[in-house]
Each structure stands twice: as structure tokens, then as C-alpha cells.
Picture 1 (cartoon, protein in one colour):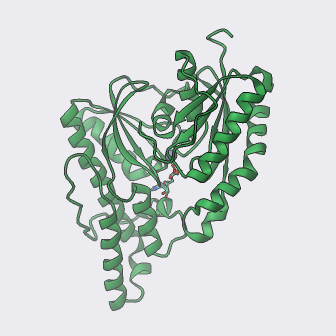
Picture 2 (picture 1 turned 60 degrees about the vertical axis):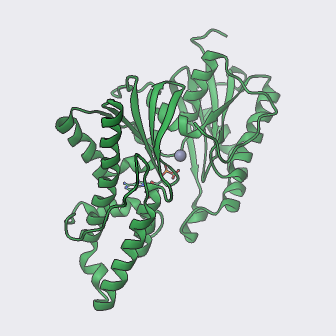
Picture 3 (picture 1 turned 90 degrees about the vertical axis):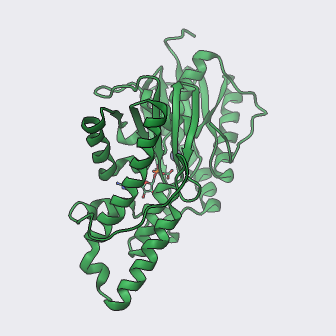
Length: 340
Ligand code: KG4
Ligand code: ZN
């Protein structure tokens, strides 16, 4: 097939979203995501339930992606799938399905690293969105990841900082849980922060060497603070909700920005691209846009549907790997821990 006429069918199943997408070269034709509500009542993702839900979702999701793309299965040039990192049971569903499809259709199979995909999501061709120029720093922030990656080329990436405990999304969600908000509480903390005073309460920032992050201490600090205040005043949370949220968000954004500033200083790279579900956060967006005028950074935020877990980002990696002829054979296995 002509290099300029590549159709990639991509599958993502690393955590709790089942997703399939079709790309024509670097343009998106469809991106279907089935989110799994089954986890809400448990306040977090239950791995066994996630893999079962993937099994139920995968056929209709792929079918819908192909139908919406308005192509025929026979047009697909290759199948791209998430090999890792992620939950083993969830990854196995996508991996097995991708292998069977590639065998059944007699087309190449392409394994994709989920963390690389979060970064290359910036390269899906979109009107009004500029692609980052190499080299750049990628900050991937979600419920499962917190990483700073130095990106020199599409496939030349080096993790220069990452969390040593909780991910930043967990810091939001666990703090929200302490305040009695439903899961995932990150977006609610963001919402209430808008009308709160970020300096009302002070939470100490962790002291971690180098470019690594730590978020578990913040959750504990929030817990002790709330327990103490509620003892004195049972209505403390209701009375101070917005100020508490704004103060927590302010601390999280400061932690992220401190490390980013350090990374910029260390590498001399002033181009920052963010990804992952937490990049929807208004505090982070504001801090990044302020940094453009304050420090001369150039920042990139992708379209929202490419920030949360989705198959479109798996597809764009598939496209670049297809161009390089980097295919996997059928013996490839899912990997829960899979380095960039
Ligand atoms: O990328 P994502 O959809 O899923 C994975 O974690 O893989 O990210 C979800 C995370 C959750 O922790 C959620 O609370 C957080 O992103 N999140 C936010 C916001 N929107 C989503 N956290 C803070 N502010 C937001 N606006
Ligand atoms: Zn992710």
C-alpha cells in the first residue's frame, strides 16, 4: 500500500477505558471510548472488574470505530495495540484481540507503549493545534502516571522525572475522597477551586531530590488537617469547601511547576507539552500559560479527547511505527511494567 494511504486500527485497554480508533495517516477518522462505570461505587479501579468489562466492550467498540470511520475491515493496513504499561488483565484483552485480528485479516501487528502514546498524541493532525517541535519536555499527568520526559524525536524519549508513590490524579482523587466527594473527585476539586482562596490553608510540599515527585504525603496532610478541623467544627468542610479545594489545588500545581522549572533549567528546553487526564485542570493550564509570558516557555495542550486514555493516541504511534516498518510478531505478550 502507498505510504500516504495508511489506515491504522488501534486498540487501547490498559486501565478502565476500552477504546478503538481508526486513523488515516496522521488524521483521525474515529475514536470510540467506552468508560466503565462499574468502578464508581468502589471509589477506584477494580482490576478484575476492568478486564471483564473490556471483554464485554471490545467487540462493539471496535465495530463502532470501523463503522464511524466509514471504511471496510479490508482497508486496514495494520493493527496497533497497547502492550503496556497497565493492568495485566486489562492489557491481555486488548493484546489477544489485536493478535487475532492481525492474524484473521493477514495484516501487521504493532505494539505500542502507552506512555509514548500519551506524548505522541500531540502529533495527531488537528486544525488549530500546533505540534511541538523537538526537543521538548512532556509532562504526563493522570490517575496512573506522573512523568517528565525529554523527547528528542518521535521515538527517542528519556524519563527524567517521575513519581515515587502516588500519581498526581490520585492526589486529587484521594483528597477529594477525604472531603466526601464522589470518585473521581479531581474535576470537582478543580470546579470548587475557581471560587476559593488558594492561600487560605497551607499544605507543605514534599522534599524530593532531583526531578522526581511525591504525592502521598499531601494526601496524609489533608487527612490530618481535615480530621483536626472537623473535630472542632463538624461543619468545617461545608463552610470552607472552596478554600480547601483551592489550597489543595494550589499545592499540587506548585509541586508540578517547581519540578518543571527545574527540568527546564537542567535541560535548557523551554517547550513543554502536557498530556493525561489531569491536563484538563484549570490551575495547571493557567500556570503553564503564565509561564509563557513569565519565562518564555512555549506550551502545548492537546485536544481534550486525546488527553484521557484513548485509542487515537495508540493509532498515531502505530502510524509512525508503520512508516518505519516496526512490526511485532504473534509471540508478543502484554507487559504490565513497560519502560519508554
Ligand atoms: O487520563 P485519565 O482519564 O485516566 C487515567 O488515569 O489513566 O485521568 C483521570 C484522572 C483522575 O484522577 C481525575 O480525577 C483526573 O484525571 N482529572 C482531574 C481533572 N480532570 C480529570 N484532576 C484535576 N482537575 C481536573 N480538571
Ligand atoms: Zn494513560
